[in-house]
Length: 195
Image (cartoon, rainbow, N blue to C red; front, side, top):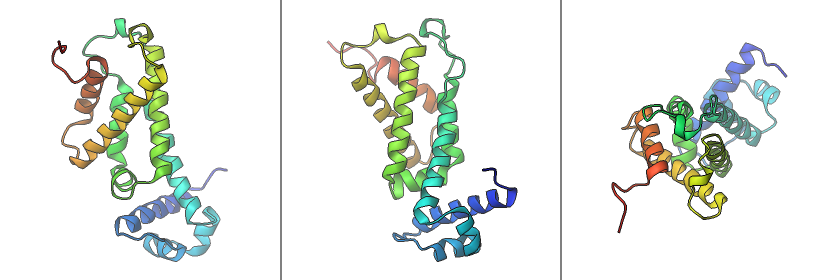
């Protein structure tokens, strides 16, 4: 169903109001509170959502859809043909997406962690890591452990890196974060191999 521009704007206002009320510390949100904060009427709310849970789900789905778009590998290349200075564009897009939606990420990932949102992010990061292994043709170089463990490990590290980045108030640029994560993924955190 295609929404008209007014409905799109109403949804945006309701999403912003929902996040704002959570930041203010409201645990149980009422439709009245959200409508008041968004300056939207109750009938408008009910045209878009049946309840607060549907509003929350829609907000999270929108964020995850944009995240999936950012993480989709557009021009896959094997690792051996990627120049050292070539940055995986989609990893930069991931961090740019987070910065663009910083209020939502700060709220749902840090201040009031939302399991639906976090699980959605982790699933997408796992898919991104799997695709990265496949497209970069790095499978022969993986250490000899279950590949799903590697996928879970890297996706978890990426998620915790995102949390760290948010908590440091984005002190590194999106490009620097992407470069660092690629470096850590390929070489680990050590300058030289341990004896």
